[in-house]
Image (spheres, helix red, strand yellow):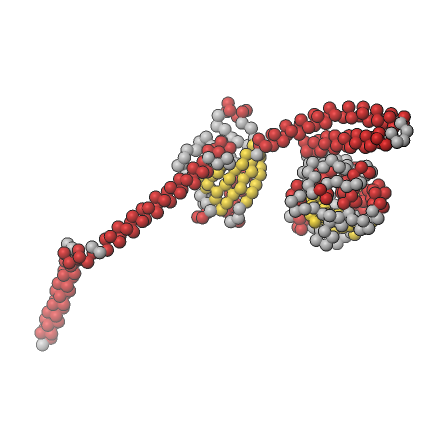
Amino acid sequence: MLLLGFFLGLAVGIGFWVWQQVQLNRYLRRVLQPLTPHSYKVGLPLIPGLRQEIMLLRQQRQDFQQSLQSYQDVLEFAPVGYLQVDEENQLLWCNQQAQDILYLQRWQPGEVRLLLELVRSYELDRFIEQTRDWQKPQTKEWVFHPSCDNAAEIPKIKSLTLRASSLPLPNGQVGVFLENRQPLLDINQARDRSFSDLAHELRTPLTSIRLVVETLQNRLEPPLNRWVNRLMQEVDRLISLVQSWLELTQMETNPNMQLQTEGVELRSLIASVWENLEPLAQRQHLSLSYSGPENLWIKADPARIYQVFLNLLDNSIKYSLPSTSIRIQAKILSGNNNGGNAGSPYLEINLIDSGVGFSQADLPHIFERFYRGDKARSHSPQDNNSIGAIVGNGLGLAIVQQILLAHGGSIKAMNHPETGGAWMQILLPEVMANSLSQDYS
């Protein structure tokens, strides 16, 4: 009986296995057999739609290729250089301008190589990395020193001042526009040399003219002498212009000018400047108010810093409304508030008047030489009467900026939200130890 059960189970198992094999063979024949006429009838309505989709995709691909080629043609003939790198800073493409600016002699179109291998500019490499990390457009200007494999051409290669503007792109890529600013700087330097030479040549004849005018002043009686007095004012104006131009050119040529630095007490310096200008201030009933530490010492060149406040206060007096006050606010800032190192305090000085202020169009150009801007702040009835100040020639604020830069400081021009007048904000380092007992603001 047991043996009969065994054979019966074996027969059932073999039968089930045979049935599975038959079913599998039928399925394979159905899948692998050629299409029947019926299947063609089912598939034919789908083929035109499929062909249309394929043609549409081909047309879109062709349009994209044409657009890409158009963009490349535009960039190729652009007056600025353009290069594009991938997420590993490998150069993918650049136009001819970029090749000329960066001396890319070892790169061929279609070749993908590490940018730093082709252009030995760590400034450019860090600039691209910064753009990728921050995911924001960036702008940078630096002096580029090209490298060359041919030793004979090295003396002919000059350093260039470049300005780069970058843009983060998808997939970690970065695009960079390059502008060669060296020709513009060379033109400006040539212009400055020409003006300086002219200013040197003008000093002697202007001095001679002034001597002649002085002689005439002593010999002419009223009312004729008033014309000579007016002539003297204009001659002095020209002499001041020439002297200011020569001084500014010297400062810009030598940014690290030799400063005779010593300890200067700020409030005493401001009081001395105001005493010199007070006769002008009394005509408009102007007053000066100071707020800040009483015993504030800075390390600076006394004559140069005196010139800074003389010019700034003279401008404030000329453009302030009658019977108003000119405010000077001084406070010590820690280095952390100014992007510096901890323990490197800065002095912030705010000079605020109640005059007409600056127009928004003029603010970016306030410190440019000869910029006169809004007529409301271009001329003043007191221009001819200022005592000891550099006035009326459009160079005063440019000189102020250069003096502060030489001291490691800076100046910013704004309009004060309360008074509506001019707001000059000065930052100066080198606050001396005897001032640091004051609390940081």
